[in-house]
Length: 448
Image (cartoon, rainbow, N blue to C red):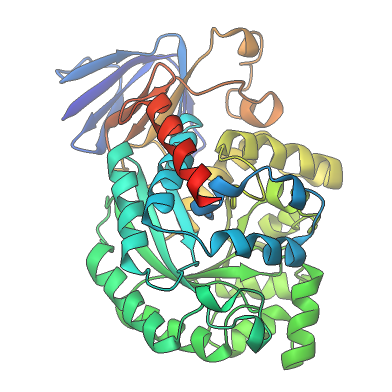
């Protein structure tokens, strides 16, 4: 399959030189960018982008797609993390394959419409009787939509009776988790440069898993050659939990279990000290920044300006749709920019810096170095927006920063994944959006 995008008005590459090119063509062949020039070439499809700006596909580094069917619930709108979780586990314990499939379709569809081409999902709720079927459902949804999907085999082994937060029906034994984790990696993980499927191991959090589970997951992940992910330093409640139980701050606790290094990234990372940030930078341990979720749950503001200055690997994420309550990476870009401008003034990252966090930075913490930029040899993942829409009129003086400063009202015009157009004229090509919504509404009614 050959696709040439011609006459691109502005091409924001996010490459090593931060190149922004004008009136160029991009050639994509068999899922790879092969040329950026001004030469017209034969192709199976030609897309005229003379009135459009083109960007590298955004990469979501932390999500909980199953939460989409429990968003905007009145009972939890004013709760913080721990009580919020306890309430929602009573809904989530009813998850099944159908709920996971349709919530994944919905969430990934939303992401594609916001220019996101790769989704990392942290699925850790496995009710009794469910295992690989839930991951099977997620990969089926991703393949249906044409999205690059990075699953995690999440896990919990501490229920309420053990001092954790989840009910007994959604925790598993360490032996069950290790068996399923290895099976998930063997079945779905493709370590290839341009792979569409990846798997990481992801015990949920220090307050819902045991030290033994964390330790054994780290050993297994490194044996299998996959990455490690969990929530960390999200709230003060978590910090108090590890101090009371283990006499250690969360990062020190994770370090003691083998959970630091360039193959590890944490979701949130709000309550790190300066010394801990130095340690993250030294070890190459990454952070998935989730600004909207952190604001919704009153968790705090991650020290992103300091992280960037110190060299901590940072990516962007929407987090679960029950704490966001949406799945738009472009909305996340704008909120991240405005939040840090408010909190850090002129030391805050620019709109373009945030775009690079959502592309290059996210690719790095997922270990996907062929993603996140538009240059020859990189994966053919991108999105395009019309510059002649009213909401962008007069706004393209700085096309690299525009999504932070101005934002985008509505859907992107095109999203391309692996060289294939998966959003065309602002609509999904892989499935009918009204059909997804209609079927999902029926599933939600039964589920809740």
